[in-house]
Image (cartoon, rainbow, N blue to C red):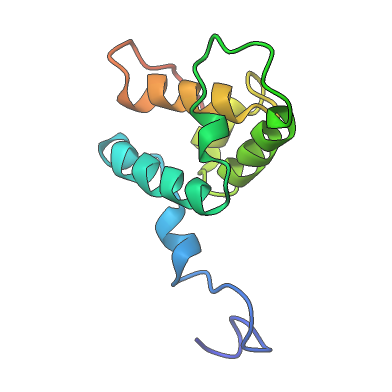
Length: 117
């Protein structure tokens, strides 16, 4: 890493590390692999069980609403602009809904949504 990338030498690097491997670039051919890596990341953050609750679990169990918002906040850090556009209006602060939207769009058998750049 050069000193122009990060003058202190500390902090995440844009070109290496876990953050780069977790970034989803919008390539539907790599969505499933990204989801597996992202769910592993959420497991380490103790958020995975929240985002994988069945869709019909309403209301959320005690303590899960805040964790669902945290899962959403983590997810949007790793999405390209197209993925973010898919979830930012229909799943605000809702990690479970955001994951469902992404699955339906990138890995689902239904017709994908058209997102203009």
